[in-house]
Image (cartoon, rainbow, N blue to C red; front, side, top):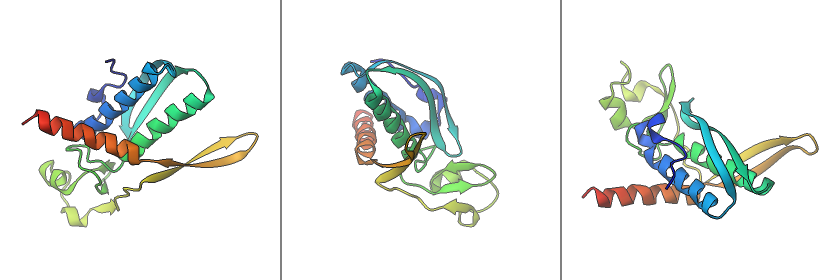
Length: 166
C-alpha cells in the first residue's frame, strides 16, 4: 500500500489518525475516484493536523469528498493527545496550543504550572462539525460533517495494533 502522508512528519500520538487517513485515501484510489494524491506539506499548527495537498480526482464531488475527509481527520486531531493518542483531551494553552492529556502533560514537563492551573479548552468530542464554504454565486454555505465513521476507523486501528503488540 502506498503511504500518502508520512506520520513521521506529525506528533507520534497522531499516528493512528494518519494511518486511517492513508487507508481512506487508498480506498478512493482503488475505486478510481482519486487518480493521484500528493501531500506537499503536513504539519501540526494551532493544535491540529494540517494537510496541504494536490490531488487529481474524477469530478468535483470527489474533490469535495476528499476535502471533507481530510477536514474530519483534522478536527479529530485537535482533541487527540499529541504524545499518546488519547481521545478526547483538553487543549492546553501554555505559550502554544496543543492537545495533551494530563498524564503526558506531567510526563513531558510541559511547563512550570501544575496541570490544574493551566488554561485549557474543554474537550470537544462532537460527532459532527460544521464546514463553512464560500461561493461567489451562493455566499456562505454550511455543511454538517459526521465524524463518527472516522473516529471508528481510528479506534479500529488502535485496537488492531494493541492485539498485534501482545
